[in-house]
Length: 567
Image 1: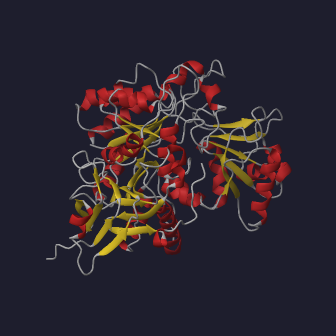
Image 2: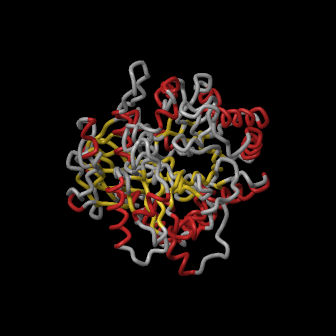
Image 3: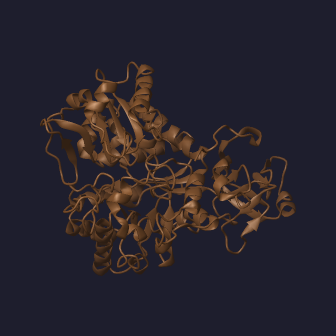
């Protein structure tokens, strides 16, 4: 059997993330694994007649990016939406919507995404009347960047049957106007779900909306279309250097779609899909989570995680706080689970050996989830569970040390802090209040307290590019004097997208580092990121993405593909 490499990446600045061999010049790959990492001469000696050579041209080579929190199916579907991030003012909004509508005369529902809460102004909230002035004869709706609030025109509200309101579960709200009709603002999924059903893309939302399966089961043509949509999302990930995905919504159908892509040779990223446990479910539904975990446990496609939502978002006053919102006295948010119910689910999922990940943005939500994990340890005994808290936009001094004490992963997103990347300072800073700023988006504080901090984008909530997330983590600035500096160094931020991502899915022995015997998941970048000024890091982009030894994305001849990342 030949000992020659299948592929060699050479002439590189290799950042291995391996403490025993931190830097190298070349990497050799064979049979989907890393054959060797070292100096150029040693590695090129492994070349054979059929070996493919990739010249990194002095650019950095890093482990494949691990996206530890994203929404693949929904993100893929949104690639064709009207993207409104950075649009401000009524006239600019009107121009964008009318142009988009004119280009799509047959769309069942016109959808916008990426909307700032202050898109009109800091003082004037969006209503259906604003949207009616722009487009009244066709249903239109647009979602906030966080995907927890949506605004709809009257036509969309009428067709969805919610113009006169609707009884909803805890934490969801159709904001009503003084005239007794819906004002146009819809908070959380139950409120805007009927709007999205107008688009005909119901299967895309099931993983996050109900955790259930499509009924009736889609036709062969519909399944094929859904596979193609999922593949488009995977191509978008590979284009940005992502080789592993930890999805944060899911159902069995998504696993089946990805399994179909694997059979077709089109599964471009290793993907983990959770079972989404909703507050209306009974504990016996976790048997399905166990079944998914047992059926899918390969290095390419796996499950074994239970995802939950405990609260909403700060901007919509739906995140759960320990104390009142700074700008809304008497209100602390309404949880989607009671603390007791959350603990029951955590205990049972933990008993089954499943990992639990809970969306927890407010400090009240973070505390309740940590309490639930502590209850699981008391009931089941301590094990290497690596349960996760997702987002942690606000926490308390009392809860910071509990992450390390309980072995809980802090899953955070560098693009999310107001002012760090695309999100404006307001209204978030006013919701949080000055006294809570020191422990808001406090990833360095948590890291220094011993927690494992893993980074991700939460795409499509934020832009998907890991390079932008790394830059945002490095350039993060305190909002005021006396507020702790939460920024990370380049290597710390890179670890958040590689080493820590692998740890979060119990795969630190196989990926997250460039090391002999590890999976051949790596990214060739257009420049040396160690030499790049942090403020110019957004100009660096993936040239070649390799997953399992196969090239999943490549820019011809190392040329710029026109995807410079505007910050």
